[in-house]
Image: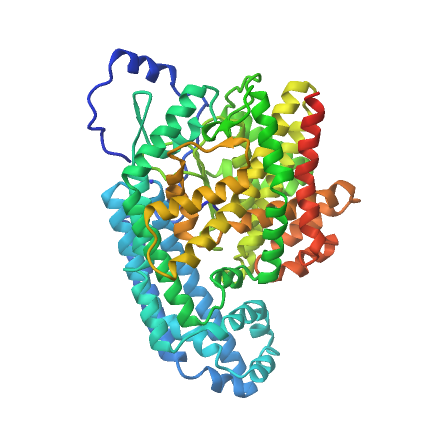
Amino acid sequence: MPRSSAKRATKPSSKPAPKPAAKKAVKAAKAPDLGALPEWNLADLYPAIDSPDIRRDLDRGETECIAFEKDYKGKLSGFAAQPSGWPALAEAVRRYEAVQDLLGRVVSYASLVYAGNTTDPAHAKFYGDVQERITAISLHLLFFTLELNRIEDALLEQAMDDPVLGHYRPWIEDVRKEKPYQLEDRIEQLFHEKSVSGYSAWNRLFDETMASLRFDVQGQSLAIEPTLNMLQGHSEKARKSAAEALAKTFKDNVRLFTLITNTLAKDKEISDRWRGFKDIADDRHLSNRVEREVVEALVSAVRASYPSLSHRYYALKARWFGKDKLPHWDRNAPLPTVDMRSIKWDEAKHTVLSAYGAFSPRMAQIAGRFFDERWIDAPVRPGKSPGAFAHPTVPSAHPYVMLNYQGKPRDVMTLAHELGHGVHQVLAAPNGPLMAPTPLTLAETASVFGEMLTFQRLLAATTDKAQRKAMLAGKVEDMLNTVVRQIAFYTFERMIHTERKSGELTSERIGEIWMQVQRESLGPAIDIRPGYEVFWTYIPHFIHSPFYVYAYAFGDCLVNSLYAVYEKAENGFADRYLAMLSAGGTKHHSELLKPFGLDARDPNFWQGGLSVIARMIAEIEALDR
């Protein structure tokens, strides 16, 4: 996804009317004309939140889950023990898969509606009610994977000689990897039921709070997305004002975010301890189907490269601004001597589809459906979730992409990124609900590759030296944000979760850890001013998906290596690439990368990906002479 995953109105500001100077600022900041921006058509899932179809599917799902439990609970080992029972075991998996698709459709619709308007009480209630109902319904399915994992290895291996059951081998083998960490059935049931009033409730509190925050920027009361967007604008005064507004509002709410962080870290520690995970990130590695040593090699390689990547680049950027150091609000500022025009939606669409089409007509055809069939929601709206994501929904439907498109070059790259996810999800869907999902590490491959295709096509068409430098600088910054910044986030999370084991962390202590990690990763050329110590509060991945963030760095470095193979490849690379995406979750990363001659376990693999960023910085330095 996210770069995130899910949809969100707003209440009127209680502030007095702005004075004349403030009115002038509002007028000056008027949004550019981007053309008609698409809004998604969720009717492909359900017509409306009060549709009787939703109740029908929930009732049907409950009936089928109760029947499923009655038909199979306590019987799986017996089915596996003799060939005559193998077809019944295969039918059980098929029925389990079918009900996952049915219930998944409802919860996908609820999450998309909610993400479009988290501050709407009706949407929030609908989302909460659906979550509670599906949690209760799925209790009847909870026994299935637990019981499946109690079948002896030899018996289950023999049972998979049945071709129908054998079709599900990749899923069954993935389920078996969870075996050492599963608990007794009633404890698993308790964990499952308590999730609604536990971590899911804290996630929802974070989302609704963040969507409702307002930031006073130059006389305007803004939501978080347009405020963050101002940090990429040309006006230094506006960037500083946005950063100060973010700091003030985050600080005003830091006690709540501290409580959320402490609670979720403790919740995770309890779960990890009961399940027997040895390292605080081992459950994430397991869900990503990636070995801990592979992630540790990635983290070590990136952290060792801070001086040659982020420190080096930001020192270069500070000189462009005529400064020894850049204040933190200028880190993502555009180059001072290059005009940054707004890019209309139709141009962004053409740019991305042309880049995809030059690589693979089939890839462009799939991406084109997102525009033609209204699978994209692009406008910035009050209360809408910040960021961007691609939601796969369920294989019987199709993915949806959410953006907050504001016409900046980075927004075009975000469109390319999320469409990469979308294409991947469409290609993987035929594997079915159980085997279409891809581990996060590989899920980011398609998105980052889509960005790279778009960037390289734009760069090849750019002959103006200043524009080329600006494009390279923008790409380097995106890569630093994807690689360096995400590994810094991962380091921050590790420190928070480790220290939380000894007791609650104060807001001040969390801020100290945040500042320590940021100084290490950004380097001496970034002047981190007071106020930045609370910027950890708005990162949704810390709340929704602990330790998710390294998947971005994994995907970026992998794509750098993959793109290098593509540049030297003979015909057939695109077919191999689409075949990799079509595999979904049926293969391990080592098996998927083998046709390209790549191995993430090779110590030199990560350095190869990082060297691509270093070469781009070197090209910028050459253009600067």
